[in-house]
Amino acid sequence: MTASSASRPSRRPNTPLFSSGPCAKRPGWSLDALDGALLGRSHRSKPGKAKLKEVIDLTRAVLGIPGDYRIGIVPASDTGAVEMALWSMLGARGVDMLAWESFGKEWVTDVAKQLKLPDVRNLIAPYGELPDLSTVDFSRDVVFTWNGTTAGVRVADGDWIADDREGLTICDATSAAFAMALPWHKIDVATWSWQKVLGGEAAHGMLVLSPRAVERLESFQPDRPLPKIFRMTKNGKLIEGIFEGDTINTPSMLCVEDAIDGLRWALSLGGLTQLIRRSEQNLRIVAEWVETSSWAGFLATDPVNRSCTSICLRFTDPEVTALSEEAQAAFAKKLSALLEKEEAAFDAGSYRDAPPGLRLWGGATVESEDMEAVLPWLDWAYATVKAETFGPKQG
Image 1: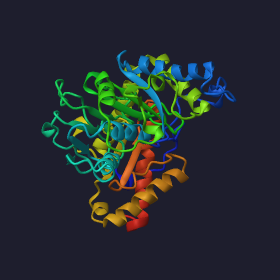
Image 2: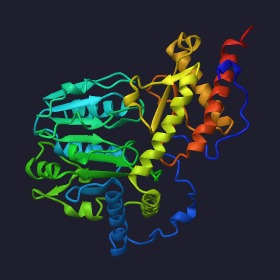
Image 3: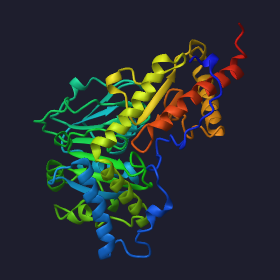
Image 4: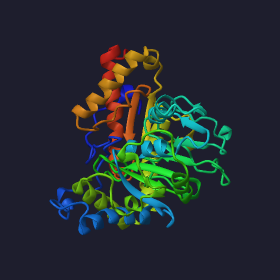
């Protein structure tokens, strides 16, 4: 259906929640899921630690994380987890920084302007593309996002990562974990946050360390002060308690209970394979719609690298793309506001630093029926905003 011929749809998504974070809760979620929360008790009590350890154990089970990898719950969401790794581990050797969207560029800023490391190579690609992965030097540390949440661009696999690497690979996997297959033998540090694929509540991060990452922590002492929430070693040894449920600071036990609920739901579906299947199905639904759309295309230029979670769309209609970037941004804002007003799609606008367009979260908690139902609304809303912007089409 073309934008000009779009009619007002009669069916809305049952759950019109398409935000890329916090993401939609699992199907069937209600406040009853939090009934088992350990409220009014210390997180350092025996039952409190047991709850935190359950998150760790369920995470390992769902994601298939090797037994010799440590898994920790850390402060400040994915950002805190990434910065713990950067501040604690970088500086032992040169580092290649890969970025193709806003969050990856934030890590570049951290390393270049805050840590001020002397030997940094920046491999940066524009929105919609990946840098040349063949140029990455694995004698150095490598920092990258697996999935660019604000660009809708992911690495397809880990084949480009050297098995015999000398440096560490530090992977921000926040919108990839639980929706994409992460090859753990290729990754030394992985981070994500609860509010992404499983729809958990915010403010907590996850940090996974390979044995090589632990060796770095125990053998390398950075020449900079480390705040308490970044410290993972004491007297040259890993603080094992962090990875057994003894968190650095006080976690929300309500959020912990919610994380447990999401992980149990994932296992009930059949684990990671089914989570990936659900997310990839959402991407296929959008891809089939894009093939016939007169106005929308993927921001990701290569189909192999298109994200199945943060599905980013750009305008392809020549009349709209001829507008200034500021006018296109205003057009996109009106479009997402109309979708919200109609309660067809909440929070579907592109990220503020990304090219103007739309972004639909397609992670495992989004039902395929809802993804199918929202697409006619995109056509209708686009036609409505275009008519308001350019006037009704004459013919």
